[in-house]
Length: 250
Image 1 (cartoon, rainbow, N blue to C red):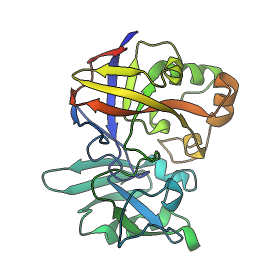
Image 2: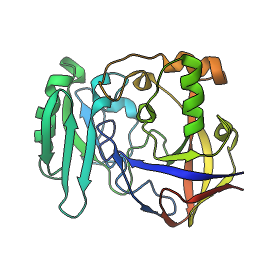
Image 3: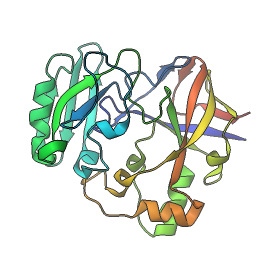
Image 4: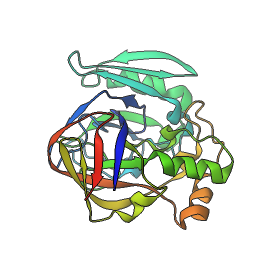
């Protein structure tokens, strides 16, 4: 089976904005560079700042609890170490994540819950991103799967609901769910598909508005019999990839 790489996206701060990339160098056993590099801990988080490491998504601010986060867009200048975030209800924010996390927490306040789940700190873990998977993963998602689900539901579904890394085209809808254990060559890189991605309520929010407007989870249950969309893969051979690259499922 062959197809084409359509889009590459990273999410520098977990659940807080998406950014399109023109190309990226994948490294073996690593996440997409700068993807989910930071996360926003809430007031009940058990993230250990003294011994930082991968921590489950429940310990962070996320779209499932705060749908307004889904409307954030991001741009990270790696050379200047400056992040720019935008949201339709807020003024743009530019800050340095390594030293100005408090500016982000203040910026988020108007669109975040109060009480125990309020945002309290911008955190990171050395050497890996805060992916939802326990292993350093890159998500593969299919444009045809998104289109098929949208057709079933009778609504337009932005691909940004799924916060995916790599978007593929040219495959049958939901074919990727059956690739577990298979290798996928994308451009110069080789990946191995590990598991399906179980989806949460974050996908019910419109990325243009941050408001819940579509029951994607019921749609997935009707179409595929589970709340699965996309798959997690690991990089087993490094290489640079870019939109337009050929994809081969081995």
